[in-house]
Length: 397
Image (cartoon, rainbow, N blue to C red; front, side, top):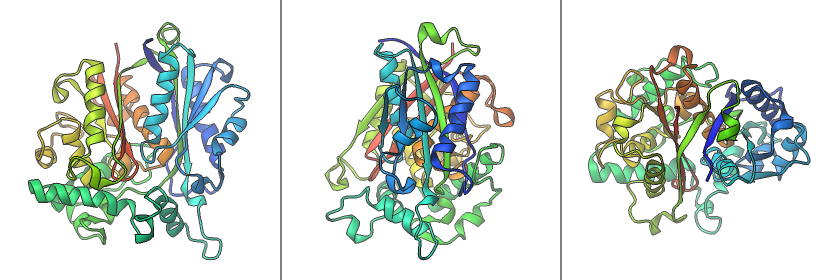
């Protein structure tokens, strides 16, 4: 199996609405940035992997076909990946396999989402239609007709964890929200750079207990792309490659009641173990310099501290209370602002997170730079109750 490096990255701004651009124009912008960052033209690309989650968002079945057309990649091979919120991470995993196997030398991975295009023509409103489109991810026979939402689904695990361990508390979740919104202030592509207080979060309207408005990420429009290359070729690029040192994935039971427990995400624990084993990571807190974890909801980030083995089970709240995961802490988490601060353009999100780590490992993250960063972790989760997880360990020589 060949060693695989990231040699080019590009991320558009994440916005609530890119009214002036189509989804394929956003993808074009991200791809153009990645090609320019790598210092190559599209002719060097051997294959493409597309991360696009929801056909209803784009109002187009098989939207990858039209992105492929618009960025001028025909007749090169292209495939699409869709695994809910984990779509971006899964697309990177698929691209990694293409290159590591030796099938191709250079693979473009691009994720895009344009959720606000999913609107009701009569009312002109997008939010109800977006929630309806997402609800189709749930079981259509029993769950979806009951009104199950993403927030409700993840709230169940958060409540179960709270009942078993006494955390995450609403105060701890508010601290995560403050951290991530504040981190986003230094990120030029972030959708929600807001200086919040704990009181602001605690007093915001309830969405799905225990999540309040500021405990939730916002759905975004945006695109992100990266270019993967095999080792011999990666070393010829103008910038030193950032290597994918470990990658792990898992897909849990779709029906949450079938799972081993309800208070954690087993797919994340399995994926993290696989990624760590491949990368030779034995003590994550000591060996990882920063992490981008999937914080669609604040409670999800706190549980992820445990699922990614930054602490023992039931101790996730301690890491935010002690400042360990702050930007100046021992293990900074979501310096980009995460999904809560930067945004959640679903198909692009895992790629955006990966690109953020790449910037830090290259010492190119500007004012939010984590000094001397050598190793980073990306956790990309999605589907009903985090059924899918992809974890990626990135490192530089």
